[in-house]
Image (cartoon, rainbow, N blue to C red; front, side, top):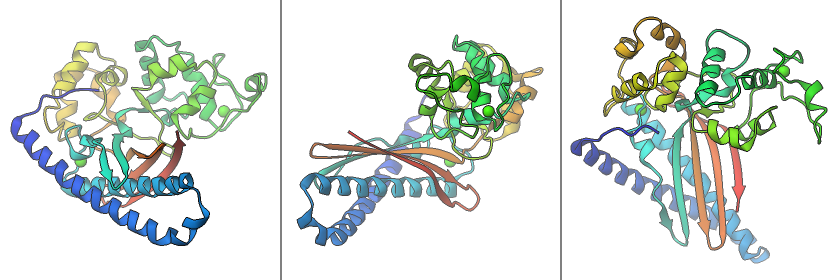
Length: 318
Ligand SMILES: [Ca+2]
Ligand SMILES: [Ca+2]
């Protein structure tokens, strides 16, 4: 992640903003808890303590999701760009509500390369992904395997690709998905992807489970992605990241006219970049007694209408 120097004034304002958001958060959670207790009264006698904790934890996590949605709506009302110094990116402090502990984190999914953009061997995303693989010292053939995993047909795009014919020979056998990926974990099913490779890729890629290609937000992405999307070197990428300052780039014109993108680099990067984000990953963790649960919610925010939609939700219990 890029770290941007903070001025004391901006930092103080942000702290006040975060304090206000925390109060909103507790109010939302207390409301959720009250609803939970009311609805659950008649079930209490029949359920074990663990089941009760589970229900309560799930309600709290959903309350956290609701709160995160409000934070994102509020942000859209305040400004039209998204950068790392905004309030939504400052969450993560544990909050105690009655006997439960809650933690909410929002991550910008457009701060990474959306693997679902790889719908074919196009002239934009496909070469950029190959550049990213080279930068991470991963075999470039993986690009073909990802394209085949997502594209709807059964034709291998290249000798390094893989479709049903290959996957059905695996032990146990399975088929290519032939549709957009649902989450990053699905990458482990793609031919050639090991846990070690996925760990190397994970800080730079995301999976947005929707049927559209998404641009990379230049105000939130790691500097290495500048190298991948514009074909520039590491020092130029660091300079581009530094150029974001406290508030991020405010217009595409300012970004594309940066000296680091002189020549062809700005034309290469232009179709892939943006200054704001529509998709976020909201993670809510709840701990009650011995129960730990988490829910990852992919949230789609329409910047103009500020409408929030939950695109995908995945629960985890520990
Ligand atoms: Ca914003
Ligand atoms: Ca396919």
